[in-house]
Length: 542
Ligand code: FAD
Image 1 (cartoon, rainbow, N blue to C red):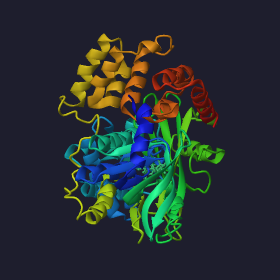
Image 2: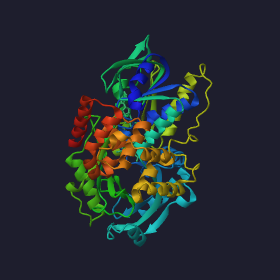
Image 3: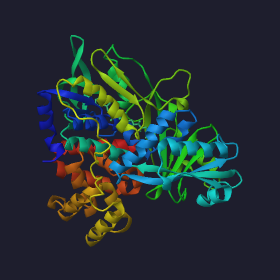
Image 4: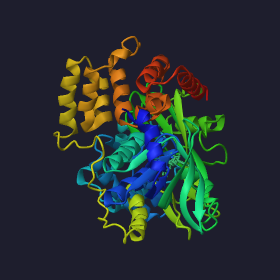
């Protein structure tokens, strides 16, 4: 039975007992806490109201980075922690964290003269403990323009070349959740914690709704962590003992255009007129550009994109890459996320610290907000340290070792390293008719679990024979349904494959048949099928 079919049994079982720890929210923060707590010995249940990473954790710039720009705000502690975490995340998930050389051009009239950028990046290397071969290099004007010929030679005075890591934020979060499950945690998606339940001033559980069936449940737990990202305040409103209204939400939009329309040779992190910095990153035949940073108070689920967001990003590109004439119609896809920042009076959105903060209530509730994708493991460690003290009498707990726990798909040392593995599995995939970029993309997606994907490819479900999508895609669907907690078309199309962002035309072609295949594999009746079709079409319209 796959996860989707087991879900209602899991829900019945989980609601009929008292848990040690309940984590609300399946973004990177909640998943990180579930893994840390469970691996130390605290039995954990995690509830997520939609899909894993459906909130901010699938809508980031998709970088594991130290946040060079935070040095300007003198956030040395944050830069040091996230900078050092880059290497850790790379070592536990090498298949989804790829070194990404980044060019920081120095622009006439920009916010950083060359000397400042040079010293800043030197300090960054030192704080982040950057490996020798990835240390920053200071480039002169000619070399900078050679690295990225689309830069304006009249405005560019030099550059800095340094390394960050590119990731797949949603897959990283899913890998953390799945690793927690491997360690014994229970993770149930599409369950919304509606109401906190208190007894004699103590928080003892939550009333929740299965958002797929509408069924109500009660989950009891000795300790509850609110890791609901942008929704942290919404839940905390029910507990008067915890700080209220502590989040300032800012919207960050990224747009995706065809690489041919904005053919940068490499990732560029550039200064723009309003003293902000913007990324342009080539990826899978596209270039994505982001991000905006504006105060936001609307619908939390789908913050969307408006004309001002598009114009802002297109203008940023025009300002620094004058020969690139991007228009609104060139935008093929976009994603828009909310930063759950901790309010700081008098500061503009970009100036607010990206540090995380933990809040506790006399009721026992622990809430965590802020922070970065990159620093999720350290955030989880801090929360779990508090929990470990609370559970000290009940369990014999080990200390945090998530820096050594290889995430699902990341066990590449065992199989000879990524490069060799891509070659080896590439040969096997070639024998099955898959070659080139597709083959590499699949091995990178599934990492050391590629054998399981290949198994699916060799055993395509007969019931899918009339479905008009290629076998490699059917195999992806079979693999993901068996292993990756997929319940809806958007889980697969947006967050497990990123097809929605980087292969939009392909999605338009395959989505109807893909949903038919999902109906077969997940046993949807006609009504459920139609519901998913409508939901997907609605999402496409938006
Ligand atoms: P979320 O991912 O939002 O997770 C919270 C989850 O809680 C959601 O899935 C939601 O559905 C669930 N939830 C809410 N209420 C309930 C409820 N009542 N019951 C059950 N579930 C509930 N960081 C980096 O390190 N690198 C970057 O490149 C980077 N770029 C960024 C770019 C942008 C535009 C933004 C917005 C952020 C970026 N960040 C980056 C920051 C990073 O993405 C966030 O810090 C991180 O994803 C936050 O994760 P989270 O788990 O706290 O929140």
